[in-house]
Length: 195
Ligand SMILES: O=C(O)/C=C/C(=O)CC(=O)C(=O)O
Image 1 (cartoon, rainbow, N blue to C red):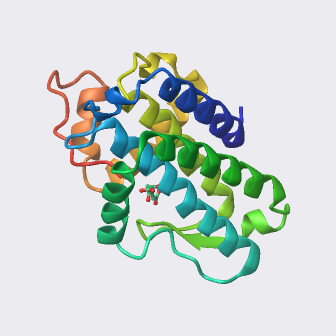
Image 2: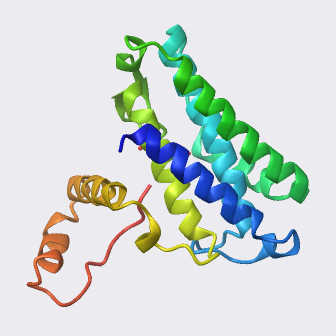
């Protein structure tokens, strides 16, 4: 499967799980400390808008950052989390459809154009679908509706693991992770935040 397939599958999974949650239960906690389901849905919506800006940057050459700052990102998630359930549900569904349309319209050459992620990485636009796949898949698990990592496509999880290990190694967490993953340490590595 390609990253675009994972985006489609992960978006479908996320929206279907969201449909199983009553309006009242949107206030329940998630796997993310301090975030209710409302926060997760608002974040998945604003993430689509942020990635739409990267696609636009790749297509036009006009710089468009994902977020103005970490503070602006956090503030819009808080704002979105306070929207009515109907507004939250339609926003996350509509922005996902817009992103899918933008991916479909990007020409073959344009995928090679470079953009800068919210973490300051310069990447070809072709990495944007992977960034979105990661968000929709993992945040589905975060919703706590019963979907676990076991339910995600195996090739997605394998790619995710490689991504996580690469980033954590770059952040100095490689040795502790390697000791644990090779069974040389029975203590799970103490890890810092991821993304
Ligand atoms: O992969 C990166 O360099 C950046 C990832 C993110 O910024 C995570 C998001 O996509 C987001 O916070 O919206």
